[in-house]
Image (cartoon, rainbow, N blue to C red; front, side, top):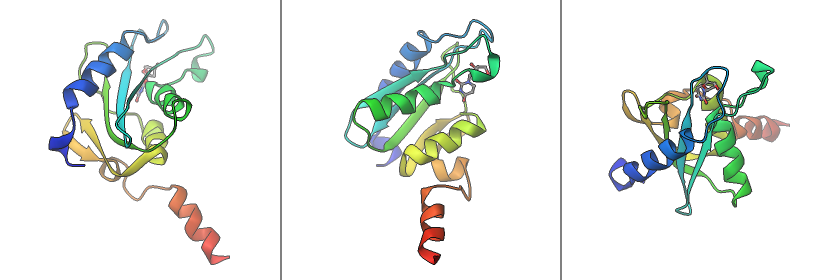
Length: 137
Ligand code: THU
């Protein structure tokens, strides 16, 4: 899918709505994420923190849970916002998490324009890496 075919405004609305449901009493940094799945549905996630700080979940974590829970599939486009509704880059761990759930070439709305998942996580370690190792045995 090309960047022009994506309804980025629908994704932004879903990300902002999710951000408003964040549970972020410790950082006071609510985050919302939304994605288009390859079957056309839009899914979302928000960060969910914990009194044991390190246990907190990023918005991308709950989004990937939502993906699986609502029927699976692969992500084709992704958007993420901070508490002001501005574009937020996924943290490094979440780029890895998204890579696993992404269709090849998944598009992300980033702070420096629309980019692919391969651009924001170059030379990624992923399922195909493991498959390549398994094939050598
Ligand atoms: N956070 C996310 O939800 N996603 C990211 O990609 C960056 C950081 C959350 C984690 C924590 O609840 C808060 O933002 C402050 O780091």
